[in-house]
Image 1: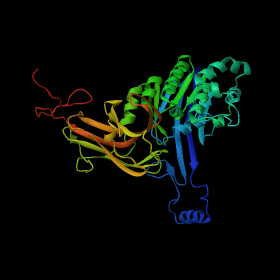
Image 2 (image 1 turned 180 degrees about the vertical axis):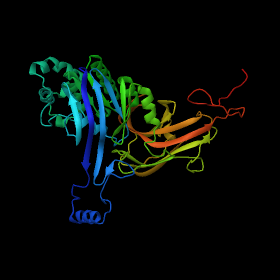
Image 3 (image 1 turned 180 degrees about the horizontal axis):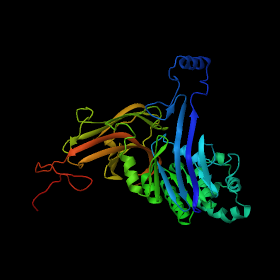
Image 4 (image 1 turned 90 degrees about the horizontal axis):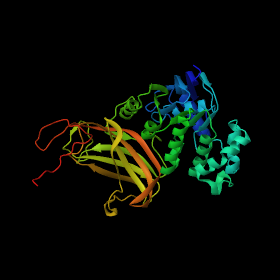
Length: 433
């Protein structure tokens, strides 16, 4: 029992809904009248269709969660938006208190939950490093010993004496992660905030977290990047609707289960954005559907000889030639994508025209390509900068959406239906040499 550093028992967190005023007397009166008649709050932004953890005027972010984490363990936490992952990290970091349950933590904990966590905007980067060290219980001598290493890792040495309120979000995260990882906490808690950094920095972060775990310290990592979870974590917990659905060391199996899970509903060939399920400053998808060449939504499995179209309807907020709207296609056999495609692949003359406001674009999945099985879609929106032969992706926004289709059978060139080995089952041209 001495190697248990986190013990969580029957943890629950409840939030009250609708206690903040609408901002107008008419709105408050409308809300009061709806409550008197037993009607739903007309201004409520959390809907029963999205969260099955409503209880009257309350919502349960977490319900009866219990688990233990050992020293040196790298624990990954995955699950859909609204599953309670970030709420759990806030409780572990003592930012908010649980409604019921007990949390016991042994050792110093460092948390990086959002951009600027633990930083004072008026202080310089240098001052914030020492401030964070003091908050974590480090002496000045200990911070002095690590200071150069922190600054070198963060890459913000030119701006270390500049107030952090002038930092970009990426610079914020670089310095905050460097501080959290290098001041030798017993427990390092990281949320998806690393997505703000560029690809090179994300690789550095994953490598450092691996080093932290190898040194016998504990890492808790929440991410939607399944490849990062598999690479770093020795154990994974899958959260759904505020509870632990799966927990174990079989990391890949749990990830596959999550990617194929329908979230308690029916995964179909149409996905509609309910509220702010997927939204960013460049593009908000409104509807994504799988259809045939005639534009009819697919409702039944199809043969691999048939062409399939992915149709995306959404609101473009910012027109930029580097804005890319794309998707990953996943098969039921692996959480690694079958392929990736985006709307501005290929020669520019072939790109669909993207303008500000409502846009509808579609892409074709050719026939005689996919193997028999179930396929799901992960929608991606990002900015791409640099030359076509060497580019980097900044601010990627990738979300798994509840959208799928099924290939029921594979047709070969000899018209026999077979289930082939492999992720894809293309019918290729053969000829005499």
